[in-house]
Image 1: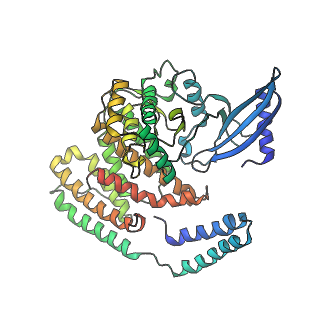
Image 2: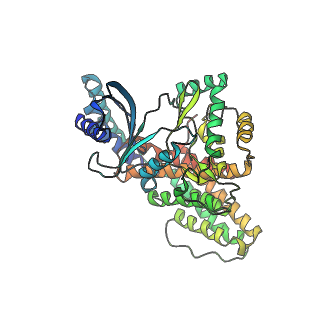
Image 3: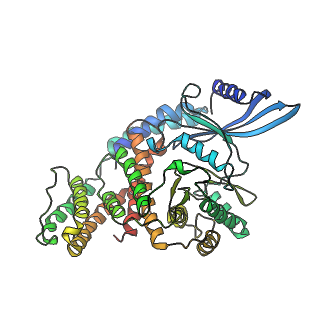
Length: 133
Length: 343
């Protein structure tokens, strides 16, 4: 998900360059420009929610730690030295590619453990993107 | 709205296509949609011919160059599909002319009939109410199923639609669709999405066999149908059509993606009635397990759409804030797919 600052900057630009110039009535026009100014201040106040990234990292650390046991002695693939979520993508692809060799029990156990981690990642993202009730 | 100079270019173009038309004028230029996929303009053309006054409603569909589907959208293919469907019982606008070159409007476009009727937006409160009231009168739900059955009963080879590509027997169709939308994801992805990887791997590993090939719309729902007098006057938005599994369209109708809180499928038809009447009209038995697979495929496809849209914005190719907003839709639709897969 793109950063909050990125979106705020784009909305400010749209208010300044697209919306406000197209409004003929002076009062709503001034309101649109003022909204852009206020959003600039808000952008300086906003901090990214580091807690979400931390929780995601924690879930991924736990997954990669557990995997050797889940794979029941079967060797783990060599995963590229990239960020954890990219490594997880490669791991999922490997698991499906090796499904027959690993056998149904190991595949199912590893897939279940991966899905558990995926659920945690999604739950963190939904704290921002999910509908507020 | 198109500038007047462009409107005059279109008038001159139509004059070249209608040499018998005298005193040709165009009125009521309206842009009906834009930004997501295509630019669509409707207008009325008026002329004299054999001492008769003629008025015809027309619709111009233009390739904006940076549409939601990127290189997967082919305006010429859409035009050819409409041409092929013209003589068939499938209700569609009549296609008139296609222009490939960028000289006139800066990109390819085609002109078709403007079908009279309305297209209430099923996502709006007013639209939901419109469809709910029409459902009580019973005629529109019947027409909704009948138009879909007409589509699936069509002899697509006779209609000349095999240029769309014909899948092999077995699971080839489902695999082709997965690969198509995966290619859009590859063009759009800006960061790893492990949940999407799991969904894609599951789709690849569980592709169902197609029992019968049919001509499939790919997005059959209210909002893509012109309605007049409680009946489907035309099926529109021909952009995702394929020769494939008719269950693909059935799954789209059954999907929760297209009813947002309405108890009615596509906001207009009762589930049991849809299944019974569709099976009666087509002779097909609906395979709910296959439909469940395609519903998950649609969730992956929606994810591909939103990644593409937000990617176009992030890449600076389209600065429409509606596209930016879709970045927040990605986890929501992936959550639907995860729940459908049991996690």
